[in-house]
Length: 282
View 1 (cartoon, rainbow, N blue to C red):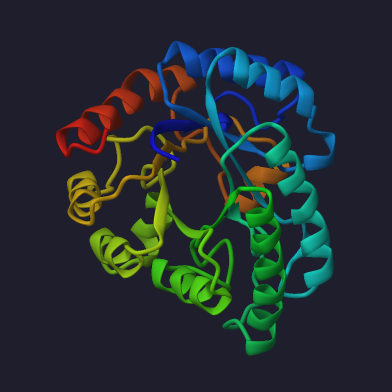
View 2 (tube, rainbow, N blue to C red):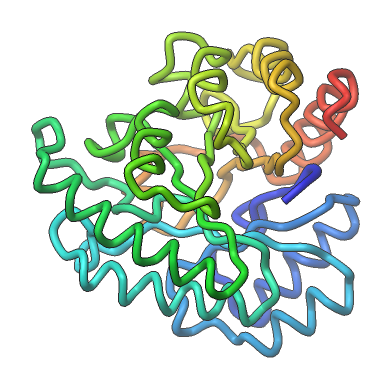
């Protein structure tokens, strides 16, 4: 997981044959190092088609997901592990390098209270078992803390680090996201420093999830902190333009946050690429 990539949601949230063809073609046209593939319904993934598509284009991949409500690890650790096991099988099958995202819960999972020890124990049970399976498949397994409006379980880099240390597996990593950090961390640099030993992946997303460089994220602080810790992992631009209702609800995205994907790709991606070059991260 190295270099600069793009989340496939820029072009499709439905990773079917057509969506995959479009996303990979666009990723290649823009010269990114890898693509992040959403595994919202891993059982429906056409493994052979995706693997062939990635290999034909020599394009690396990372997979990501959030758990559906019936599989929230805080309540249903066995169901969570079953779902993650399928996702890990598909991730390995297509030749991707890691499974990451909200692997410990759901996008929009809120109890109305701080997480209980019982909930966190359930999460550790599911996540540790999934990470062990990932390791047996030669995969990395990521934990992405997200903001308080999307989960009550993990909101900061330090919380993700603490969870990983409870599990004690060396193939687990922290996956930060600048959109969530802009809400939750006491300065983006502090979030990066808090989990520096485990940070291998980061979503580069603007404060409104739109075009990077057009919001309030402090990109010099973000890239400066990454350079300071010697970050050598993957950086994926994640911007949402058109979302299906089930995703927009969980993310609380109620309006277009950019004019089009062309705006994000033609302005936001070059902005991030230039910043990464400036700080010698690519």
